[in-house]
Amino acid sequence: MFKNVIVGIDFSDCSYNAMLHAVSLASKLNTTLTLLFVVSPDEKIVVDSVSKENSDIITYAQKRLAELADECRKTLPKEKVQFKIRMGKPSREINTEAKIQGDAITVLGTHGCSGFEEVFIGSSAFKTISGSSNPIMTIREGINIHRDLTDILLVIDSSRETLQKLKIAARLAKAFQAKIHLIGAYAEKYPEINKIVDANINFAENYLTEKDIRFEADTVENTRKADAIIEIARKKDVNLIMVMKEVELASETQFILAQFSERIVNRSPIPVLTVPVDTSIYYSKEQ
Image 1 (cartoon, rainbow, N blue to C red):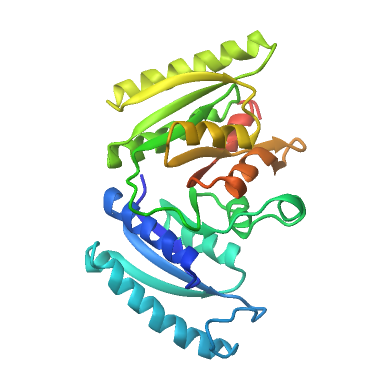
Image 2 (tube, rainbow, N blue to C red):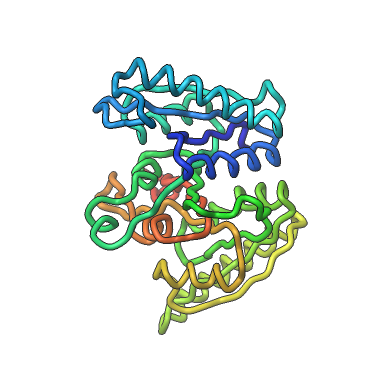
């Protein structure tokens, strides 16, 4: 699992911070690292005092990417670091590159958003997540790169997709020797739902025990609010929150994104890894 790490670069401090996290991931997971810069077709990209002409932007980007790649090679083997420039809409091109490489995890820096922007516009990072079929790690600007990945938070609820996070969480925990915090999300006044949560927690505990991964498990009520999860993560001092790219059934064949995971990505000061859902679980064998 995971042969490639891709990090979106736009030469901002935010994307540089994401690059440092990506280097750490590539090192621990023993993968290749791709620094990816996307030239927007609407020519709204302005890099320092460089002209908006695409040719000038590309020349500038090639020089800067080469410099950043050399910096990454101080930690990673030379042959495992590359950089690319793609033309088009950033969210689409980032996901296209991930599909081409396969078995990839994408790392993006994000400024996050809230209020009007969150409801009516959404963050650029989440727009990439929306169209992605691979896991994406989002990192808010200002996150301290010197903190090792030591504690991972997984919310386990009663949904059919909730346990799909386990395999990736276990892979990361093994690579970083991290501890996993399982949080069982109880539903107030719904004991039958809570029984499903208990069963899922029990499955997760058995799975992690077999993998020889350190963990602890707690249950809390009413955790479907993003701010509540973020507060739990702060109290437990975790440095990664894992969520599913939740979907809701819109029709017999179409799914739409749910708001919970989007709000976690937009609001969390802690890095978030969003895992795509295998939607085949929603269909019966007869279908």
